[in-house]
Structure formats: C-alpha cells, structure tokens
Length: 215
Ligand SMILES: C[S@@+](CC[C@H](N)C(=O)[O-])C[C@H]1O[C@@H](n2cnc3c(N)ncnc32)[C@H](O)[C@@H]1O
Image (cartoon, rainbow, N blue to C red):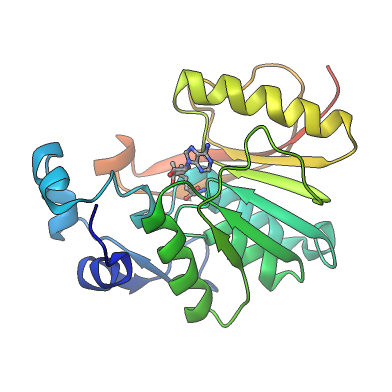
C-alpha cells in the first residue's frame, strides 16, 4: 500500500466543483489524468486501491445537494456517512450544521475526506473503521452510492434496517444501482446529475434521495 495517500491525492487530482454542487470544492480526478488510465496491475504496483474517492458519484451528489438545500434535515444532529469516498456528502452535512463522522474502509478515502473538509473549512471526523454491523450514537446515517455490489449491499441493508428499528434515521443517495433495495424506501426527491460518460456510460444520471421506512 502506498504509504502517503495525501501526497498521492495531491499529485493525481485537481481541485474542482461539480455542476450540481458549486458550493463544494473537491480533489477530483479529471478524465485526462493518469489515475484514469491506470489498469489493475499499475494500480497494484503503485499500492493504490480503486480510486472511488477520486470521483463525486451520482448518489453522493444527490444526497449532498439535498442536505445543502434542506439543512434543517441534519442541523444540530449527529450524522454518520458510510462509504464517504471524497467526503462530499459528509462535507455538505457539516455545512448544513451537523456533527459528522465520515467512515470509509479505504485509507485514501479517509485522507481525501480530510483534505476536502479542510478545503471547504468544515470539520468532519474521518475514520477507516468499518461501522457496518456496529451500533453508535448517531441520529442519522447516510449512504451515498454504495449499492453496486451484491454482498456489500445485502450486508448494508440488513445493518441499516437494524438501525432504523432502533430509531436511527437512514438517508440513501442512489441512481438506482443494481442492488439498491427495491422495498422499504421512500423517494424524497430526484436530481439530474451531470456526470462523466467514462464512468457512467452517460453524461447525465437521475439520482434520488431515499428515506428508509419500515417494510
Ligand atoms: C462508489 S463510492 C461512493 C463514495 C461517495 N459516497 C460518493 O457518493 O461519491 C463507495 C465507497 O464506499 C467505501 N466502502 C465500501 N465498503 C465499505 C464499508 N464496509 N464501510 C465503509 N466504507 C465502505 C469504498 O471504499 C468507497 O469509497
């Protein structure tokens, strides 16, 4: 594993905002940057896992937009962001007045979230500890674009259902990835998210914000 994630991120990204979130600045990879061109072998030689943190995923963008537009949803509350990636929705939560923990098992995502929070002058506690399966002192748990892989999605859904039953609010931002739960979600709103065709096979994805509700 590359032992200086912050230096790698600084060298392989540029500071950008997405069209949907002009208020937030992030270290992101552009399509012409080396990180896009790396194959699995080159990434492994560089000691770098798949750089999910280098992109603002459609689901996370929708969630972040919603929090910025509806700060009352999270202001003054304790928020856990699971699978934070670049930290975009965690940063939006902090801008909206929440106390935010951003968890991501990838140490590069933890470093990216710390760098991006600093860039936006907000405080976010980033951690590599995996909260899935754990309980904690959270009022609201949010998940941005994490239902793309079946085992993880199943594990995530079961854990989120347990939290909901214990009184924790759950918000999900997702463009209807393959393993997004089909039941027990109430759509709050949908955004047309400009994205990159290299990542999504399309320049625009509709991504919704969902509230988990009892089955
Ligand atoms: C597609 S990215 C989404 C990032 C961000 N939420 C967004 O919407 O831009 C998914 C992220 O989830 C993280 N992840 C996967 N499994 C996880 C787990 N069990 N706990 C915490 N993070 C996890 C990955 O490392 C990755 O950064």
